[in-house]
Image 1 (cartoon, helix red, strand yellow):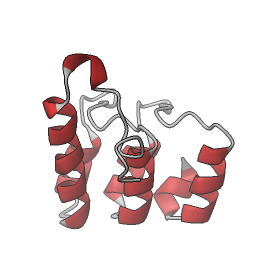
Image 2 (spheres, helix red, strand yellow):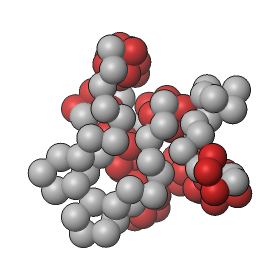
Image 3 (cartoon, helix red, strand yellow):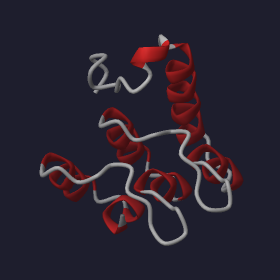
Image 4 (cartoon, helix red, strand yellow):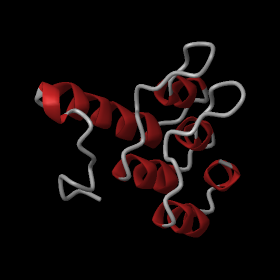
Length: 106
């Protein structure tokens, strides 16, 4: 999660390639997606989304990555997260876990 928060895209990519759990939650329910969203790390956010990060997964306080990014006044990250949330909602019920990568966007 540290690499995501700090924007180290190469390390994030390496960890994902080695099978890191993209939706792993920390002690307070934070995820790599929520941490990178707070810090406006758009490239990391898009990479995590492309690898199936759950855009709607809340932390222990009920906050999602979109809420954190919006709270911090980000512009590009919330837009990317909203687009992914809309794509997930629009997907057929049995296909909602389909990733951007599988859709050819990753």
